[in-house]
Every structure is written in C-alpha cells, then in structure tokens.
Length: 264
Image (tube, rainbow, N blue to C red; front, top):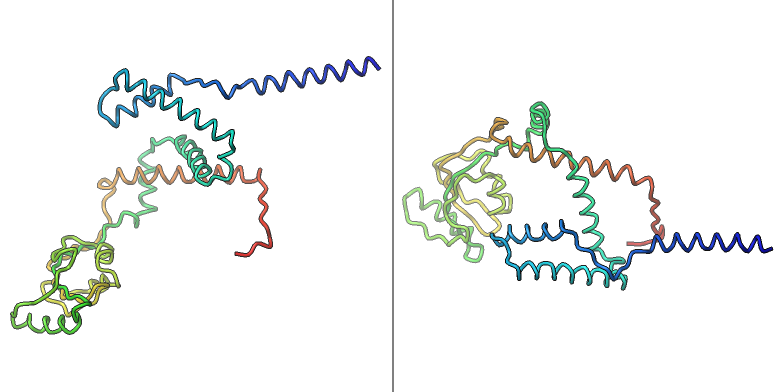
C-alpha cells in the first residue's frame, strides 16, 4: 500500500514540476529586447527624418511598455476571442512571413518566361487626345447638343455647359475615358474619325460633341521598358503561390464543421 502511495506521490511531483516549468512565464514581467527598441527608433527616424533625442527615446520605450501592458490585460480579459480584426491581422502576418521567405534574385530566363506568359498584362492601350462640348441632362442636353452640332458645320458659336473634369483630354485610354464619362462612352472611340466633330454622344452626365485630334495605337512593349514591373509581378506571383502551397499543406490537419441547417 505504501509502495502504491509513493508511486502516486512521485507521479504527482513530476506532473507538478512539469506544470511549473511550462508555466514559469510571468505575465507581469516584461522583457524588451534591444532589437525591438532599435527597430522602433529606426522607424521613428525614417518618419521624422532625424535621430530621436533622449526624451523622445524614453517616450518611444514607454509607449512600447504601455502597449505591451494593455495587450496582456486585453488577453487576460479574453478580448482577442472572436475578434475579426485581430484574426485578419494575424493571418496577414503569417502570410507576410511566408512571402518574405521567397528569394527575389530571378534569372533572366525566368523573367523572360514570365513576361512571355503574361504579355497581355503589359499591353499599352490605345490613347486618344480629344476636346468636347458638354450639354447637361438638366439643361435639355439632347436637343441642344444636336442643334450645336449642326451649327458647328456653319462655324456658329456653341453655347455648352461646363464639364466638371474640363474640356480637353490628352492621351486617354478607353478605360480612362470610361472612368471619367461612364455609360459605355468609350465604345464610340473604336472606329472614330480624326479631326472631325462627331455627332452628339451620350454619357452618364448628358450629351457631348467630341473632336479627336490624335490617336496612338496600342502595342506590346519591349521587356526592357517594363523590366522593373515584370520583376515585381514575378515576385508577387511566387509569393502568392507560396501562400497557396502553405495553406494547401496545412489544410489537411484541420476539420471544419458548418451547421448544415444554416439558412442565409
């Protein structure tokens, strides 16, 4: 009987020592590393443009300590539970860590291959330079624009309205035009005649008479002119693939339960 008691005592003592070792962390003790302070000082310097003085360094460290205290108190209160912002931030952080592990020293062959496979991404759109007369919906736009268009052939003055983005537009892509005028306005530029006033075209704001003075056809650029952007895109592509690979590998360790009766 005594032998059994001693065994239970020994097991209990071992469990106590293990528990003590695992929980030796004191949540009331804060250790600030040199690297953490240096990192904050460097961040402060990059924002302000000079080295902080002694008082400013003291405030930087004090703010760090206060932030750590508030963080720990929030954890004690369980404020991190079910917090979407915290979850999203932590998910972003681990994503950044995985992305930063991707080397960015690509070979010329790798860059050229990526550029060739994604050439449409670097296509330079056709650009248009034009001027216009604007007639607002609020001021009988259709009839006034048609009358003014007829008057232009006889070199009569045009009594138009003020367009909030101006009268003249230079080197605008179709997407730029659509963003500014809306309502499929840019589709009228596909086969537009240069150096002639074009019959009233409707936009999201009213009607317009336009005069296109220049058209520069779209083209695929040489890789040398977009090399930096290609390298940035290639790096991001590799990072995205690394994150997907990481998620796919760890997904199998999780089980997801969703209420089958949930109605949305």
